[in-house]
Amino acid sequence: MTTVLAVDLGSASGRVLAGTFADGRVEVADVHRFKHQALRDGARLTWDVETMWEQTVIGLREAVEAHPDAVVIQLGAGIDARYDRLGRPAVTHWYDLDLPEAIDLRRRLLPETERNTYLAMSLLDFRWIDTVHAHGRPVLLILEGVLMYFTEAEVRSFFDAICRDLPDGTTILFDMLAYSLVNNAKHHDVVKKADKTVEFKWSVLDTHEMERWNPRIHLVREYYMSDHARGRFPFIFRTLYHIPYFHRRFNPDGAAAVRGGGAVGPRPFRRGGAWAGGSRCGPEGSRP
Image (tube, rainbow, N blue to C red; front, side):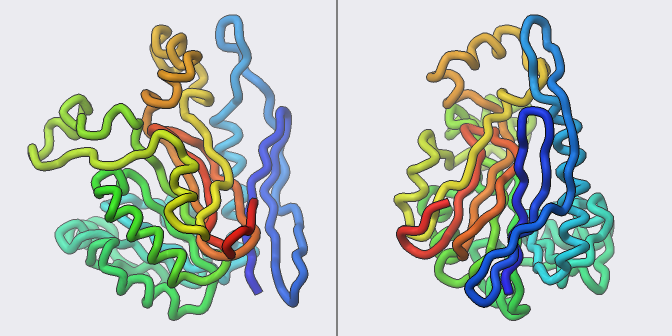
């Protein structure tokens, strides 16, 4: 049995759903419903992103508690305390993966638990896939602020491995860098202070390009962060984001999602970077 979560956001309400695939049938049930309303930003209306996000997290937490068979792995975890922020969800297991020096620091600040353990290795050391796959459960992968530091060849090899080796029902959530920042880390207010060898290496201008990498990758949905910023960007940027050329190339970092394996998939939550969105790795020719 495979259970997949979806988020449906409407103009005045939203819901989190759980779809269960077993014995050739799909059953869909509401997990959490909520209402939201538009906010006024000067002369225009904007989404109430904070309420939508808070209610989505509540729904996801309830769904995870109702479907505790998933295995979660956060790649490039650093000292991100997402597992604790979500209230230590009762999943089958939650892994946090990063390079050995990052995991050493993490262990000093955030001790492991029986259900949340750490893997000290590169995300390109695909032994972690064997560890996750051994549970025989649906898999959720989370990457935040990671893929932009790898080359396109490395990113493609990562998605190829996921499509090849992870089971149906695998979901990937990730963010993507603003396309204009590739090879321009020196202009980033934080990264420019790091080692000079640190560089932004990867993004794509057209999200659908990823679908051509592997016949099992299918875009689900994407969101640009500027579309949900509720006036937080300076006026000049809010004006320029109405120009398609600027909108696609200069949007700031956000979140995205990709599906790995399976024929049905959830919706990711917001889009940023050059883009953010969702796709899935499923049978060749299948579509969202």
